[in-house]
Image (cartoon, rainbow, N blue to C red; front, top):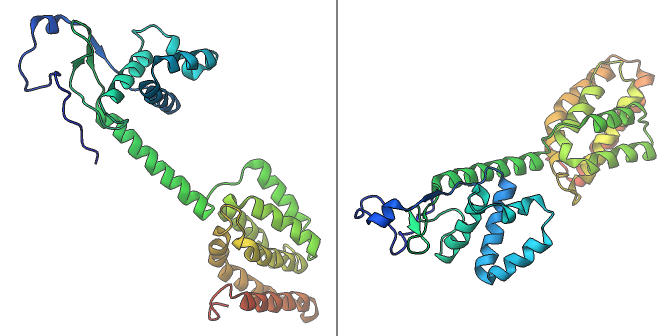
Length: 284
């Protein structure tokens, strides 16, 4: 956890000597953290550069960003929350305080001036912790491809599956959609397997064959540099027992001649996976 810096020289906190009378009579400015994270980032960044480059830099920013609502605080009256937070951050930077840890004791910038009371460090640290946790969750969702399919993409994928044929062009078109939307890997695999294994007769065996080719093409391209593509291998592997148990039942329940094409497709796909070393031989 970040450590709070020592009180700045000349400042007074709890346990220190009682303030002098002029100090006691000074107006107190309670600095408040901006609630909006984007606004907080803008103010922190500007305050850092204003401290380094001076007030002339602030004047340039005011002119350049005069129509930007995120910089409206520069034009606000000095008694408004965002303007006060900005001015405090400039001063805090000059004292060596960071954006997540600062002196919390009250202070005066100049003699007989107002008494500034910084916000509690714990509040910003909790926000940063929550942001970090959410960022990790987001990264994990991307890594796993664990996102729901937007309505428009779900509709397009459904049409691709309805029109899917066991041809290179048809399978390739559906595969490109899957790789381009690799961040949706888990939902795409779930939808594909749900349709494929819906019933022994529905979809027909030739359509199941095309869907098996599609699964295989997605696996082959799961090593691409597309963000999230690697998640396909794990998600498809989790579904393969269900897929092949369903295909076994299809083969057992169809006339021998009709099932021949599907049986050949299964042999072809498993042979390719063995050549690619896609899965351990025992699993295949």
